[in-house]
Image (cartoon, rainbow, N blue to C red; front, side, top):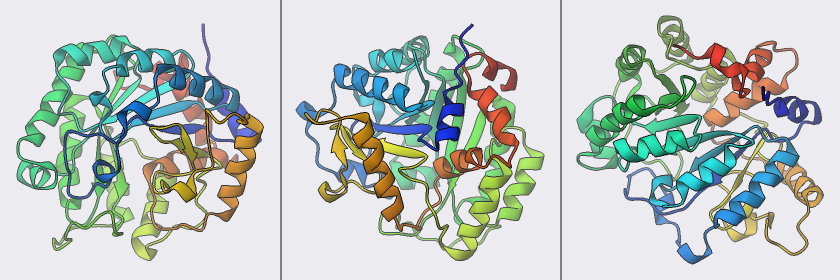
Length: 340
């Protein structure tokens, strides 16, 4: 029996429990709200399998419990399956995908590689609205990917989730989203909309947009996997436009496609790079010190990403819900918290 309790070490030492791994800036789509596909791409310099293996070892020593493989679009990498298999030996492995490159064959391969959670991004339950954001035909491909993923799971605890942005434009579609997820026995997750330079979709639709509405949806729909803490903080963000004291660098961090460590995916300029895992003088102690310093100097308040909500409440030892989360995220115990 393997029990992964590394998160206890992370909480006690106040060290990162989640690492976001930007697999690539490449993507097969050019979504209106996204900046990743606009970033420079150098395929030859992208982290190779051995680099990811080295980073996995670093994460294990840090006490990181989960690695979230994101992009770009992770499925453009042909070695994705080998990389997932390697990370899954010591970590909970999550992938965020637009779903358009997933078919029956590679869905089966990615589950067999040891993937724990697959998040499919669907921005609106209305097909025309989603395709307006991402491109014609994308909605149907994303929906089909969910069927492929459901049909090919190799373990009963492997999870599928739809993730969406909670914005005034689509809030009135969340009940439809969740009704669908309830029926499909999959999960639903969301981030609050952030009206900054990276997200310029017009918000000219009237809808119920509040924390109270999220509480109502959570009570009604078992597929809505969101903590009360996250809803509370989302409400603060909706009301004030900011949530102070971001824990980027302290509780989570990011590695870009080229091995550079940054505290957040919004900090990707050369000046934001703390160090590279292949630097000759790299040490975990040096990385910890640089992450601590960057966290203390970080004044950003402009978003409340789900990663913040999912992890911040775990570090509050007064909040007993972290015990359930610890067990549900361990390789052995998490099966008892999954909807059958």
